[in-house]
Amino acid sequence: MATKRDVDNEYTRISTFKEMVEALEEIAANRMQNTRSYVLRSRTFIDELDFIFQQVKHSYKSEVERLMKEKKGKDAEKFSFLKKNGKTVFILLSANAGLYGGIIRETFNFFLDLIKKESADVAIIGRVGREYFRESDLSIPHTDFDMPDSGTDNESLKKIVNYILQYQRVFVVYPRFDAVTSQHPAVTGISGDILPQEQNMPYVKYFFEPSLDKILQFFEAEIFASLFEQTLFESRLAKFASRMTTLELRAQKIKDILKNIYIERGRIRHRIQNKKQLETFASMSLWR
Image 1 (cartoon, rainbow, N blue to C red):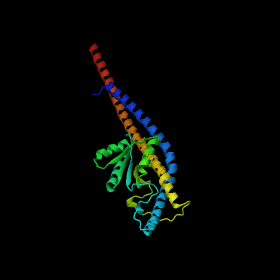
Image 2: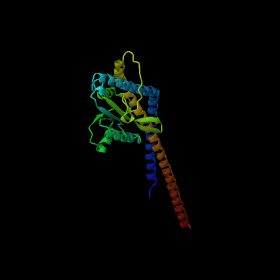
Image 3: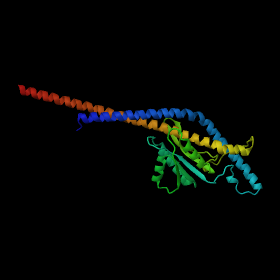
């Protein structure tokens, strides 16, 4: 049977843990709000830019194929103004720590399904993702990168961008923010390519100024990095929202535990009072 001291110590310990969880929740909420304002402000613009990139590349590819056939060329599929290795890479945006709820695991499982279906290179950003990958026992070589969960490390970002620039097709798998209580795994192509299962991009005729080659080169060099950076912010927003929701649920559970402990303290207090009363009555009977 628990003593009053045991219950008091447990109440103090759980109360301290509750304060810590609430502090972490507040930090996550502040980071989410700061990231959210930037992401949602630029999301529509970046999504439209990515879509135009895909349309331009698709339209350009069709034109190149026609020209290459006339010249009896055979490598129109891999035409690019930047030096590419002709390969595809799937990049997982994970996390370096826990307390992000189930979204990190869900995103990893989504990533795992994709790389099992595609013959592609694999890159993983974040320690949690690397740990999940080791636990999966999937014998696929992969490249690891580090990136902080908050803030921007320009050196790390530059290293990652330089790595993925060499690839012909680049797909990033990341958690995407829908609402504070809703996030889902997503994949986006930042190299102007659509996923193999979504080969229904309509042909659109564009007029290019100054020229088609310069426009595409700008997309492949400058817009490419912007698309990747936007995806990083999208991932962080989803993670912070998921962490805030997870901590709120845990805080509520802690409140329920404290409520039960408070009730137990009352029972012990009444038990002690009853014992004292019985002892008092017993002593009074001895005086008679």
